Image 1 (cartoon, chains in turn brown, cyan):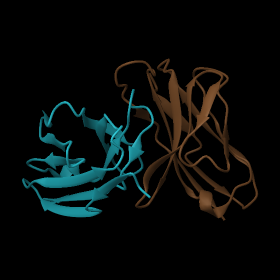
Image 2 (tube, rainbow over the protein chains, first blue to last red):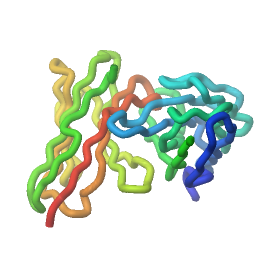
Image 3 (cartoon, rainbow over the protein chains, first blue to last red):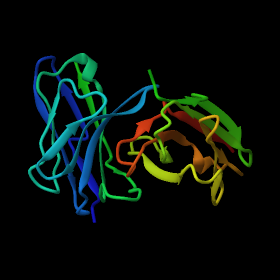
Image 4 (cartoon, one colour):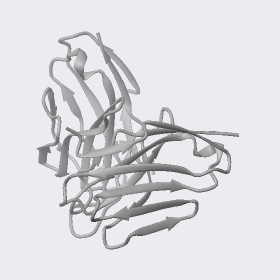
Amino acid sequence: NAGVTQTPKFQVLKTGQSMTLQCAQDMNHEYMSWYRQDPGMGLRLIHYSVGAGITDQGEVPNGYNVSRSTTEDFPLRLLSAAPSQTSVYFCASSYGTGTGVYEQYFGPGTRLTVT
Amino acid sequence: QQQVKQSPQSLIVQKGGISIINCAYENTAFDYFPWYQQFPGKGPALLIAIRPDVSEKKEGRFTISFNKSAKQFSLHIMDSQPGDSATYFCAAASGAGNKLTFGGGTRVLVKP
């Protein structure tokens, strides 16, 4: 299993440009999420999905869109990039949302710089 | 306002020493408290986790201590090794533990 994969690893955008960060998992996980990591802030939840066709907002959703058409893929779209979106983005997945606790598996991250 | 506060931001420990990282939380609905380890250029990986029905959990050289009344929990790394040099994040969640709230992170450097 490849686990959680993210592309690209690095990206530089100009203010106002749009782009999509790709995330895929091959573990048949129901739950997927996107976090951003900023110095001193830890990781903050942007959007999450509990299954194909179902998404919801996290702590910092403004400026980002998501969709979940398949179990495997969960892309994150930046509609009009701003310097405040300069960050490292992590995708994560886990088995489910029922009773019990499910370990989150994180991808390797995408480092995004907006100039 | 961060719901999970972590300290210190960084620490240096000699090989064989003990590293201690502390976290405090506000939301009493949190019932799952994991610690993640992150190496440079990598994503976080689950290290150890605890539920509030126990006050301590140990896995190898890593121990979580949990104080429900004080709303605090800590990570102890015993016999610290240079390979433990990484950034450590505490986190908290409720329910299935999917929506994690992270602390700000602690960069640990273990000197040989």
